[in-house]
Length: 73
Image 1 (cartoon, rainbow, N blue to C red):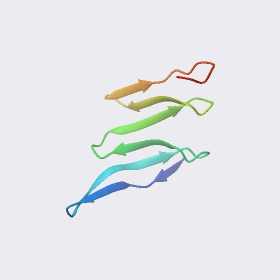
Image 2 (cartoon, helix red, strand yellow):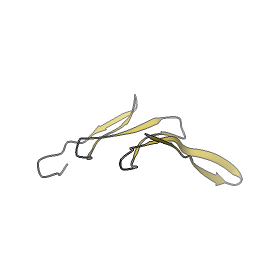
Image 3 (tube, rainbow, N blue to C red):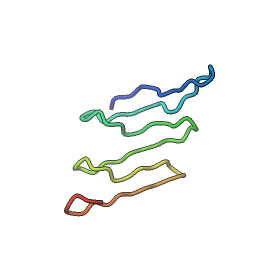
Image 4 (cartoon, helix red, strand yellow):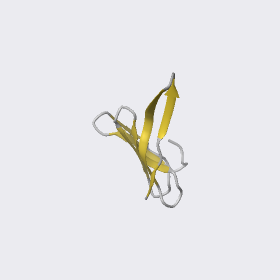
């Protein structure tokens, strides 16, 4: 896994973290997980074909995607 990078913004001289602790897929460099500025974790899960099947913030949100044989959701 590749890890690192922070995303921040500065407004009126104050800098805040929008997201950090990024984790990337080693083969594609696609983001797999990160922590939002409100300290919630975000995780993306892919199937064996690399299609997005889950977007989750544990305990807060869990969105699942189901793909059919035509590769449509």
